[in-house]
Image (cartoon, rainbow, N blue to C red; front, side, top):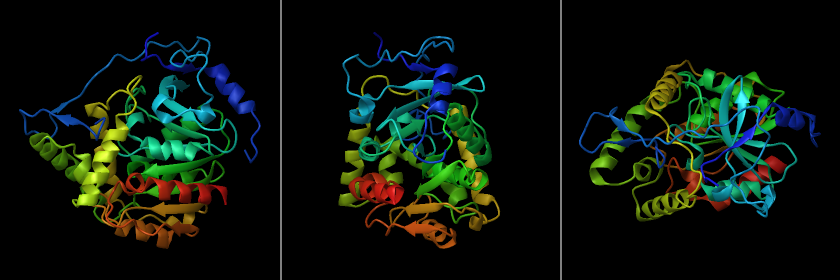
Length: 351
């Protein structure tokens, strides 16, 4: 069987999820690659792979996982099946692991990221006790459609995806761009969202957020010229400890060798950058309208979304809990300190 085959999650499966009772209510390797021969920051080389041909009428079949494979609760992210669900006629790809019960935890990835940019130690750690779902929003990775150029549009697509899976209530973990999206969902869908975790992110109008796209482009160009992955400079501090943590993350992100997600396309990257710039230039958010409990985390030296935004979020959210900023850590603080973060996140979600 081809390792690139994805599992189709059709309308019948969604109906079964909706009827299932709940115990509660209810580029790879950062972001893109640039041609070494060019210094135009938008002249991007992307690895394109054929999208698997799936039919919405086919019966659910996990053809990428052997019949004697472990159950989702004991699986690991590096071999979790890649599935798809139709969202208003457009296929969204996702992976699910962990217990097949309880309020699901939906993970929202950073700018330029796809399914394979989540640290498997974070996902596996959370999935040890929680049902965890990662997904590609509209136009991202193997998901179809065109990526919106506003955070609000991305949030609405994420809500449609959650509804397509039949969930009446979810928890959210948003990293960077994903944190912007999570804030909008929490505000607009208070009955859908139970708890929120925000990492490496900030409020609308936050200090320096409108400069994130330019920083990402500059780091990608520099990374190409120096043969260093731009994640090392964007997500980690330039210290011995930071460089060591960055190299460790890059190794973990390569653990999955089969059925990897598609790289994000140039149009999607442009749309995300436009959305981030708009978010950073908006009037400051009225965070008092977010009434859910929120856990806020980051490194103390985030050069992408300056760490002062993390403190600002925690101060302005009515029901927030601030994880002490991780020392000698940056934008990827939850990856660098994954053991501590997972423990705190599980404690928060289960409290």
